[in-house]
Length: 231
Image (tube, rainbow, N blue to C red):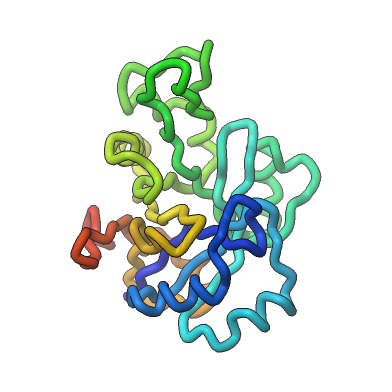
């Protein structure tokens, strides 16, 4: 089994983060995480720099991306660099397929339940028809492009996460978990639990494609719980 935080931002690749590589490794080790994914906003990490920062980490640290698209933010695993046109979700899908990677919709219902003018959800912006139910929301075209959706995001409200979980169920998705931290506080609050060891990026991508995981969360006492039974 492996417990991963699939959604982490550091100072090296995300300008809005204060989390240093050293802080990340120390906190992930303290929490007993098997690994973390650096879903940086700007890519950020060159391989030599990455190797130097994490070669003695003692846990799996995997490069990834969070891409801002015309259909919200998407976590990408198996790619390390931005390519032309990938701000369009449909073009991103082509690039990810060419790289043999995986796409996961990040925090798809953040700010969905806020009252105006704070209802700034990226999938259903102002002026777009608001879905009446989770099954209705599941018809959004984004969900035909991604491989899964994030249902436990440590920076979301419980209502937003619960709705994402309902949409995942309607789609037949498993759902993933990640903290979306930009500092050491809250790391591992959302996790993805794999039923196999994950030691490398290729291990991770293979397990994500095979759906050998379940979303989970860490409670106030530090215990990890799965939302569903891992297959």
